[in-house]
Length: 325
Image 1: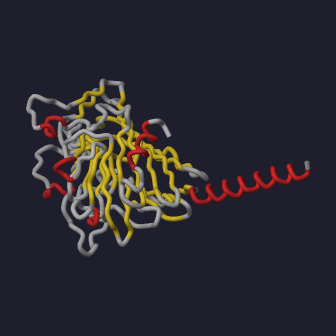
Image 2: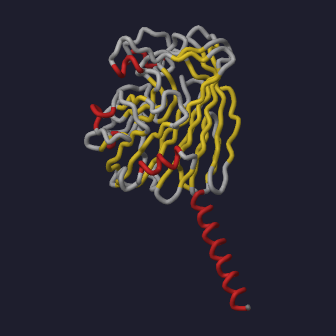
């Protein structure tokens, strides 16, 4: 009997030690400084969420792997990185925006109008309040509220951005939820390729030399751009680390599996609205109207993994996401 009691106590002690280690490794913490919030996972810097009302839209930059490697482009937030291209300055590291909302462009930015041939007036996603930054031993949550404001100062809609962060020794995960509310009348998201949930990667993950693949096994920009898929992954070597980045489209999203505005130069975006441009069929129309008082929710998961997409079992990770894990 005494031997049995000792065995049980040993097992309970082992479980407690393992649990404490897991919690310590996965702890998520937030630190606000002015118009930004730093996200730490396991005591290490992971990302910074920026919501300066002087900038046209909120974004996260930079994002890092579990080993600390920066996986997103620095420009235009940082302008003096040697060898980094200075094209498409409206493409920030991670952001949610669409190029045609009630006739206004929220994807581009008026400050960089010289880079664009668009004649569409620009809108701004303007910060209202930070609802929540809640850290914890296994995950952390952040939520913020914004107004979509047209070039004429009219508020078109409300927007909530909510994120849940996880991490372990090999990966970082962000569960993203974006809610558009037609609080000031109907909201129409027009058919354009310029959208919608996007990441702009560091140059080392351009494809080529990096590898670009979707859930259907199609590879490279030719096989991925404008096609529908559950997920898209880029993997390659950044500063000596073999790593990859995937975006998962939630199975309950509008028009799942989504279309992808994914380029070899490191931009990839899930976009359920640009059907006419993606299919090159003038008879198609991907516009979608949220009726007055209604809302649209879009969910995505970002997975930053060690190794290539096969080693990281990205396909299985998507199945887990689809199953609610």
